[in-house]
Image (cartoon, rainbow, N blue to C red):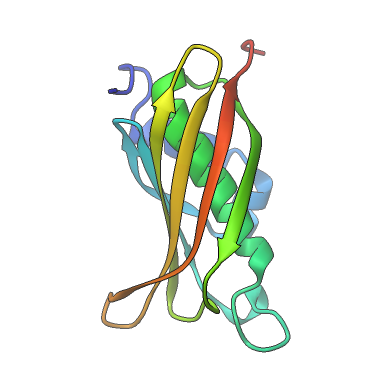
Length: 142
């Protein structure tokens, strides 16, 4: 399952940067291709909820985009999330949120993708804080 030549990390980064909400969050793609994608967000105070943990909406956003980019590496650039679920395992704290997604199965009409949501501390140690799974659908090019 490799990405087509037109779909590489630079092209995927341009697509992410074209999303105003992704720019607002400071999201960045650190890996893309071969049915996988990794998205990272620096954890900062304005992304916290009232108890000082990273807001669940930020985790959901990261899962949604990582799932979709991973599927796009297989299905092509014109895809939309069909649906996904997130299971929160522990409060997200740390320096960086990392959403690492991988295509589990891809057909012509959809891809099933799973995503681990991890936080990194100052030493780069990862802690799993949530898992997500969803379906991504190819759509006609605009």
